[in-house]
Length: 292
Image (cartoon, rainbow, N blue to C red; front, top):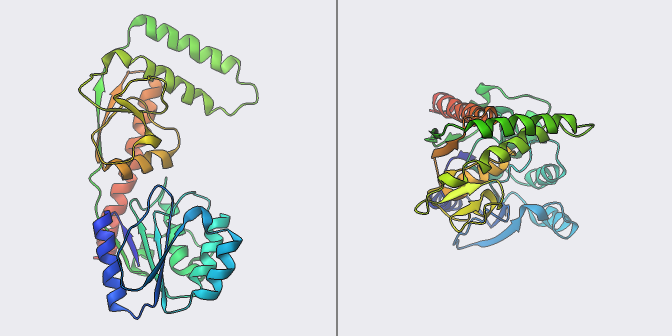
C-alpha cells in the first residue's frame, strides 16, 4: 500500500487499521531521523532509522527475522533520486521477505514523477525493474493520494539602481572565476546576494526562513532548523529540492510567501518552484482519476 500526503495522525490510523485487518506478528518502521513515526500497537514494533538500513548489524538480522507475518512501514524514505541507491537496494531485500508493506510519503516524488518508481520498487521490485513511470501504474498497486494545496505568492520589491549594478558586477566576477567549477554555483551565489538585499524589509513581527544563518536575527531561521509547524516568509530558497520538501513537511506550509527582489535569479527560483508545484498538482489530479 502506498499512501501520499497523510499527516502523522492519518498515518497512525492507517497503520493501526492495517495491523487489525491482517495477521501481523511484528512491525518494522523505517524512517529518516527527521521524520519518526510514533505509534502504539499491541504487537512488537521496531523503529529503524533510514541510515541504518544498510548496516550489517541490522541487515542480516532482519533478513532472518522478517517473514510474511511481518509488516514493513517506510515513512518518508525517498531521500535520493537515485533509484539504484544502496539503501534502496538493501530495503528491497527486506521487502522480498513479506507481502505486507505500507509506504508513506508526503510528496509523491522529490523532483519529477519518475521518482515515484522508487516507491513502486519498494512495493514490488520484480514487477517494475527496468520500467519507467506510466500513469496506468497507479492502477496496478494500492495507491491513494491526499491532494496538496500548494501555492506561491510573492512580495515584490524594486531593487535600487545601485543594487542592480552590484548584481551585474557580482555575476561577471562569478563567471570570470568559474574555471572548472560547477556552473550551478553561479545561481546559488547570486540568489544569496539577492537575499541580502531584503534584510531591511524584514518585520520583527513575522518569522522568516533563509538558506543559511547569515542574518543572525532571532526571527530568521534556516530551512533545516525548522522543526515544527509554523508560518514562515521565504527570504531565499534552498538549492536542493529535497531541502525544500523537508521544510514543507515539517512546517506544514502549503501557501508560501516569497520576498521577490525582482532580480533574474529570484525569478528563476520562483519559476522552478512553481513548476514543481504544478507537477505535484498533476499527480494529485491523475491519482484521483486512476485510483478513484
